[in-house]
Amino acid sequence: MRPGAIIKAGLPARRKPRTGETEVSSTVDILFQDWINLILRWAHLITGIAWIGSSFYFVWLDLSLRKRPDMDEGVYGEAWMVHGGGFYHVNKWMVAPSSMPPELHWFKYEAYFTWITGFALLVTMYYWSAESYLIDPSVLALTKMDAILIGLGSLFAGWVIYDIICKSAIGKRTDTLAVALFILIMAASYLFTHVFSGRGAFIHVGAMIGTIMAANVFRIIIPNQKKVVASLMAGEKPDPKLGLQAKQRSTHNNYLTLPVLLMMISNHYSMLFSHDQSWLIVGLILIIGGLVRHFFNTRNAGGTGKAIAWQLPSAAVGMAILAMFASYDPNAVKLADEDVITANHALAIVQTRCSTCHSANPSDEGFDEAPAGVMFDDLAQIEANAQRVLAQAVIGRAMPLGNMTEMTDEERAQLGQWIRAGMPE
Image (cartoon, rainbow, N blue to C red; front, side, top):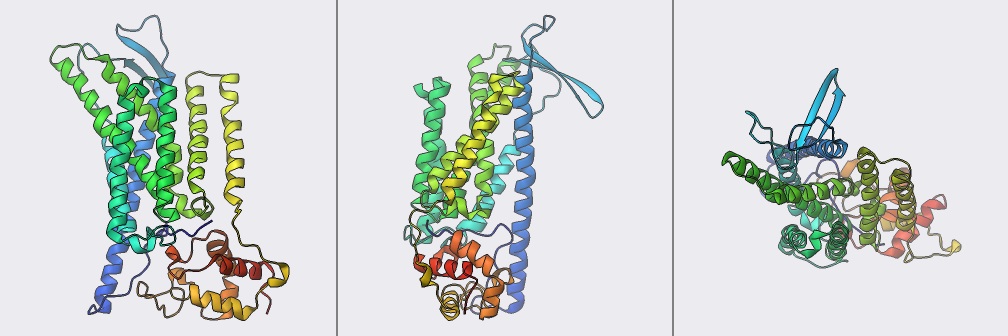
């Protein structure tokens, strides 16, 4: 396992004022940053829920369509629904109806604003403080600008490569395309985990997948739909390939949604991103999420019995494998039972590696108060927060941020053994 770093899920850490700044201006800056973070995060949640909701609904609707003998000409299928005390009757034209209705609803802005707010969070929370939350010198020594350019370039490159694959001969077969997409994400995950911090790598895997999904809407699904509408307005017959291509990308988005959701909240679970082979964990997440989504899609399409009997059990087995793999650390430092350190030794380690930030008077220039109010100025404070130390610095290896104080594996093992032994004097 190796250390990883990321911004906390909550508000950004408070920063000390730069030379020449007043305490008043610093407080204003802190409040401004906090509100920007809160507004962006809330907007991202709102738009993300709207996008996922509409996406899941239309995939469900598409799979629930049934052919009836009395359907209008050109109708592919219909579905009857009941909700909120009312009944709904929906028809689907595979290409388009013979004439345009007076009002046509489009579903696109949910996707656009989900990506925009997510990208804004990436910039304000990772790129702005790349030294702390994106760069890990033990992985690769990068300048702030290099890390930002690699991050931005990877988002663009991911979409370009994916789009080329979809439009190639590989994209003509669903099975080969699925394998190619899996390989693409796995390759990106491997590269990210060898460039960025653990959490920074995971968030970029999620950001790359999210970019692909949003670009599918912006570059393929909506433009193709507009071409169909334009053909109808011109009295021409729309190209059916446009609808098939849009459906292909929509299906990809549907299967990628559950994995990308876990990627975006992975910063809460250091056992995922701090593993030495965390890129393999990405693969397991893709498979598990895809299996769960496939169960619902198959069931919504009318599948029963054997058709839906294997997905959820397989996903459960995948979760068990994920838990065992993520918990196994073959490179962990092994200490003999008699090697339990003294309380003074533990105090020295913590004050050297952790108290630069976690102190009543932090020496780290980036903090003017202890993060989360946790301080390690004396042994009593360390003992009171021992389980936090065990979870964050020993097991999760998420602290210190970016391993800026260069805590060694042996020190982590010593702290862990001391805490588990009951913190002897």
